[in-house]
Image 1: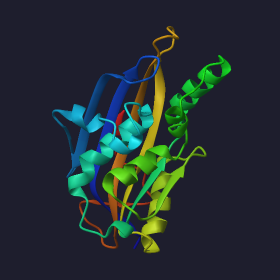
Image 2 (image 1 turned 60 degrees about the horizontal axis):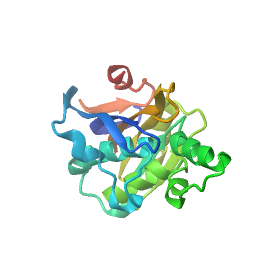
Image 3 (image 1 turned 90 degrees about the horizontal axis):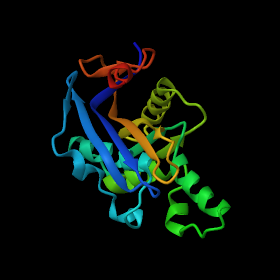
Image 4 (image 1 turned 180 degrees about the horizontal axis):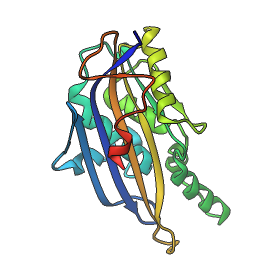
Length: 220
């Protein structure tokens, strides 16, 4: 028998931001998947508010989507110690938006703010998610062309080795929506995040690792 991951819930967060500093939210929504059914969360705007520890009004779009997805799952996290709750995110683009803003300011001779530089790291989304949920367990960012199935395999290893009792596992990426106006760019960020635990027995909510991640096609 294979090793199964018990899927407690899945959240999909989408946000589109615009403006030279990426702080104007044009569109946002969060959907939750439980017991095989997706439903949209009403009044999801509050989930996208930058956390206090982000340092101010600015937050990278990828981080904003990841934090919103984590907040949507917060009440569904099983009662495990903070040291046994971890977070694992995969990304191809990371916080490229903040990197681009910082480099644009630097190359134009302007002084880029330290807050912007602080958001330019690839591990910032997972760090903000961990801080938002108060998890002090295993955290990691996979950013070398990682696929969703590889993230799940990594999650299984972490859980099987008892390095965590529950993991938030997912992917976050962004894509440009409007590039024609350099003074007012628009970018969309998406994060799919699932709450996983180890389950050695087959069940209605278990996913075997040899299968493709079943939620990704539904999220497009």
